[in-house]
Image: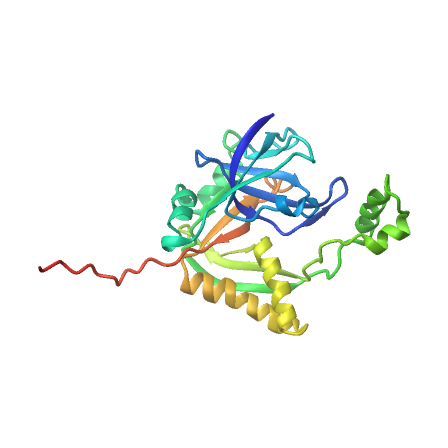
Amino acid sequence: MALTKVLVTVKTYPTLSDKYDELVCTAGLREDGSWIRIYPVPFRKLDYQNRYQKWHWIELDLVKNKSDFRPESYKPYSIDSEIKILEKIDTTDQWIRRKEIALRNVQTNLSELIKEAKDKQKATSLAIVKPKEVLDFICEPCDKEWNPQKIAKIIANQAQGSLFDVEETKSIFKVVKKIPYKFSYVFTTEDQIVRKLMIEDWELGALYWNCLKDAEGDEKITCQKVKEKYLDYMYYKRDLYFFMGTTFKFHNVSPNPFLIIGAFYPPKEDTKKIIQPQLF
């Protein structure tokens, strides 16, 4: 058991777990700049004051997740471990403080990164990647609801030890809504290979539901608004990087085990700005 400070840069959209109910995968950087993954974290069960945001420094007791071979993978000492929220790194001065931490070790060639992931001595599973070119952002429909068997199991787990039976628990227990679309970037890196990778990001999920509300339930308009943010704004108007991570299940078996787990999009540096010599 060791207190560890982590700068949170990644929070995935919640998924359902038979063992822990509703979970968020959190990833970030230690004070020395090394990557760390924290899983499981039952984020929506945390008290309001313990709900950290991206770019918060947090401190908690972490131990190596022995059921996960990936070197960056840790877990809270217990599922009820306290998470202490510290300073939040702001975006002043063109995001300079965030860039100083996040851009220490930028990958530009995804083929080389995949080799590191497959190297059993390294087994790299988290990185920040600079795309060479982003070609598209795609929205594809998927299942609109969570697996009903998994929902039933979670509700039964919730009812155990409570004052409510299963039927009463159904009426009061709320699960995060499932996004009925998959979102993916189509892009290249220095290896010139065109790839399509799905993005799983808390920020994207929140944007989808906000846009759906503004669009009065029109999913076509909603997907277009999401694309405008993640392609037109983040790529064309900002300096886009991908936070990327592997999944435990596919790390060793998939030709490309990485997916995009977050976006980092500081302002573009003004290359047209010329410093005039002082004449007087």
